[in-house]
Amino acid sequence: MTAIEDLVPRVAAKARATSTALPPAVRAEDVAGAEAVLGFALPPLLASLYREVANGGYGPDYQLLPLVGPGRTALSEYRSERSASTGGETPYWPAGVLPILDWGCAMYAAVDCRSETATVLLFEPNAMADDGAAAWFVDAVSLAEWLETWLAGTGWYREDADAYDDVAEPTPWEMAASRIAERANEPRDDR
Image 1 (cartoon, rainbow, N blue to C red):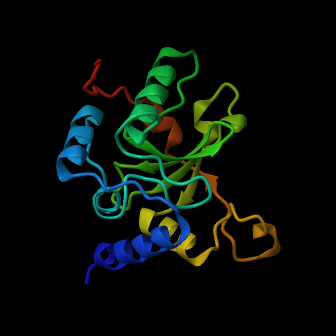
Image 2 (cartoon, one colour):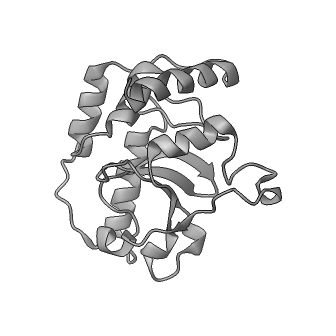
Image 3 (cartoon, rainbow, N blue to C red):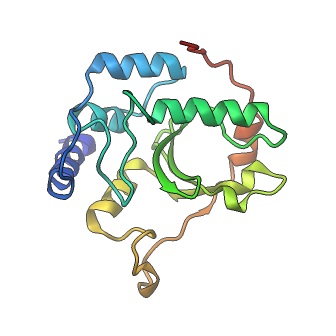
C-alpha cells in the first residue's frame, strides 16, 4: 500500500468524525479543469484528498478551502494573491504555491505544487515589510507530514502547543526570494 493509499482513508475518517457536513468530493474533471486554469498540476496526494475525501471543509482549525465551486476556493485565492502580488510594489506570492487553508488574519497554509514532497508553507504577511520573502515559512516538509500532524493533534496551531517541547515551529522558507522573483507564464481564465 502506498503512502497515499494509507493516508487518504485515515484523513477521510477523521474528516467525517470532526466535520458536521462535508461537501461532496470533486470529480477528476474538476481537478483537471482547476489544473488547466492554474497552469500546474496538483500534487497527487492533494488531488486525491479533493477527489476522495471532500471538496474542502475539514482539516486543522479553519479547514481546507474547496478547490473549486462558488465563493472562496483554493483556485480563486491563488489567482487573487498572484494578481495582487505581481501588480503590487512588493511581490510576495510565488507561482505554483496553492493556498489550501485560510488561518485568518490574512495567513494561509499553502502547498508548493512544484516540490516533490508537496511542501506545506505558512504565509504570514504580518512578517513582511519591504521583502515578500519574509512572509514565508516551512510548516511541514511534505503534505503527508502536515496531515499526519493534524491526525495526531500535534500541530503548532494547537491552543496548548507551547506546553509541549516536541511541537515543530515553522521555519523561514529559504527558497522564497528566488521563487517570488520568477515570472511565470500562467494561463489566465478571465471568465
